[in-house]
Length: 389
Ligand SMILES: Nc1ncnc2c1ncn2[C@@H]1O[C@H](COP(=O)(O)OP(=O)(O)OP(=O)(O)O)[C@@H](O)[C@H]1O
Ligand SMILES: [Mg+2]
Image (cartoon, rainbow, N blue to C red; front, side, top):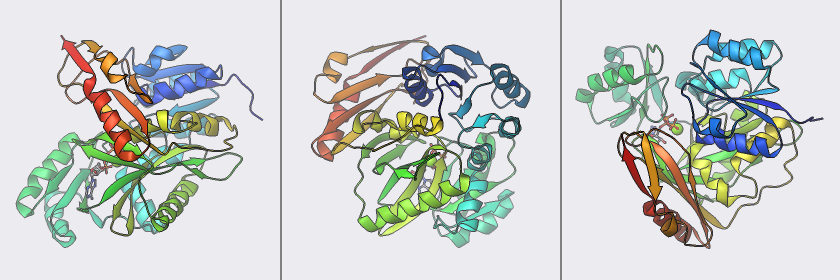
């Protein structure tokens, strides 16, 4: 039985956490939003805000013990995951589990689990602990290869390398941009995929695993630019992706929503990685589904029923990005951006702009994908940012 109000402590207070906080507030929950900077998006709608270094074990333990939340919901990867394991041992629920947050934080751990223990199809890969080892391992994968730090997100420190002469630079870039202290990199075959997708997968406390219709997306400069739902997969591809998502999320356990990423190459479905939390490409569900990925996450976390997920015929999202640094940001063009039916704009309320920082998203529904995508694109383009120092 679920008793409300629950006390929810969010580790990470970005735009995805903000939507989880809003969903929690609608159920009258008490929300504590944590991040490393003040006035982060989720803090703007939380009951209490805490600013701390969430990679600092002591600081993280202190804040969670002081608040004694019903659940800790991680929103980002960069956390002191050993502290989460300690808290779990003390009886505090961590979503989906402390182990899942640890395994998915490291590319090598999730890759060893997926490709090794669970035998899922992934890109061919190797690890290297020095530039020399990288030069020894890469050629067997065929050119180009992709070199990635084992700990990083948003494409940081990643390079596509066309031949042996580029490997030293890729090694340096991976080392320089890795999160934490890193001793090795992963090098992968470069997949010439037709499409990449996110399969939102929900593990329930008292119910079967559920799937949202697959979301197609495009990435550039390390971040997602646009997404659409449903992505066109054959029945066979969808069954395979769902089976793989179920296998890996069953292994990770716990309850909550996961964003499971796949590449589609011809008929092949290739597992990439996953987030044990709402996924940025899933922002499209703010308009596409009867329950957004954030509401689904919260229901799964609280053990509430999810009797059905209904999705529009076609929906899309397009990010709204800043193009320069500045701390005074104003938005115009809303009249133009919102003039079409079934179109909506979400501005995250970030106080600081930086080149490429995601400040908002435009979402739209349409009768078919081309229409939904064009509407989201027009709406995002209509928003003008004025950024001053
Ligand atoms: N082996 C590969 N072949 C081709 N493209 C790739 C490969 N690996 C990654 N990419 C591209 O780079 C993007 C980012 O890679 P990946 O998801 O592994 O890194 P990430 O830094 O964890 O990203 P995020 O945290 O934003 O999901 C992918 O979405 C895909 O577009
Ligand atoms: Mg990714």
